[in-house]
Structure formats: C-alpha cells, structure tokens
Length: 219
Image 1 (cartoon, helix red, strand yellow):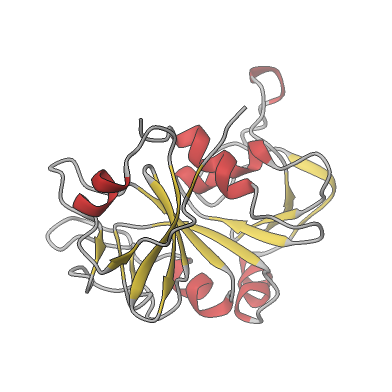
Image 2 (image 1 turned 30 degrees about the vertical axis):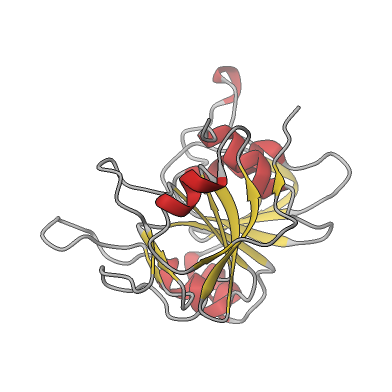
C-alpha cells in the first residue's frame, strides 16, 4: 500500500540530524514537525518569521496569532524567536538553513523542481520556494508519485514552469524513496507492500533499481 501523508512525514523526519535548522514547506512537509525523533534537537524555521516552531497545537492551546507560512496555527518551542520576514529570508538566502522539505508538482532526473504554478490556474506567486531551493543545499521533496489520472510526476524533463534547476537530490513519494544521481532516479526504499514493478510503471524518468533496495518500516 502507498504511504499516508503521516507516514511520509515520519519517514522524512528520520533524515533530520541533531542541531539542524530546518524549513518545512506547505502541505505534507508541515507534518514533519510532529515526528521529530526524541533523541535530537532541531530548530524549525518558518519563512514568515518564526524560528523554533513546535508541533501543531491541540484544540486547547490554539493561538490564532501563531501561524506558519501556510497560515496554519502552530506552537513555539522553548527558546523560539519571532522576527520579520525580511530577516527570515536573509537567513534562507544566506545559506543558514541546513535542511529543507518541499512539496512539488513535478521533479525530473536533472534535479529540477516545478512546484509553484499550473498554467491556466490562478496563483498568488512563487512564494518562498524560489529562495529555499536557491539557498539550501540539502533539500528533500515530498510528493505523490503519480497524479489522479495515474500519470507520473517523476519525469525526464519537467513540463511545468520551474521553481529551481538542478537543486533536488532526494525525493520521497507515497510509493518510494529515491535519490537523483547523474540524470537518473535511484530507487533506495519502497513503501511497505509496494512492488518495484509498480514503481517502475509509475516513473517516467530513467529509473535505476540497485540490488540493495529495502522496504520502509514503521512502528
């Protein structure tokens, strides 16, 4: 079976390391805040001006003035700081974010990402994604492997307007965890119960399947 949104967030959280400054994009990436391992300490950064973002609040401690970049209510961890978006983007553009998790419409074998618009649909703008893909060296994309019609979203070349070029090296979908190396998707892990054949069928870009592919485990 394919991964749930929560399982995707849990798997991404395993990539975090102690001491990281981490930016979580809108959508599935925001859920990562709920799955940070207990044995590490990271500082979650939201580009609207919050460093030290905690997990989503319970109904009892919702503060409508405490939101992330996606306008969702969040909590602030001990030691958190609040500042202007100008300073927040200076942190991003200055390369001070260690790890970024982004959603996407498409990713291709060249490490390009399309995440900000679909032609013909009304959009507000690119938002902070352009700065994040330019300023962060360690980026992982979380996305569905295929669209609602079954068409692959892992391509040889992105068909939608790019957010960034040559900036993505890791992709976690609802079916698999892959790395992008030398113009190919390298399959590293499969979702529990998902066959390699299904992943091959739903990956339009060049896919390499090593002998040591493992199945993800969840408690």
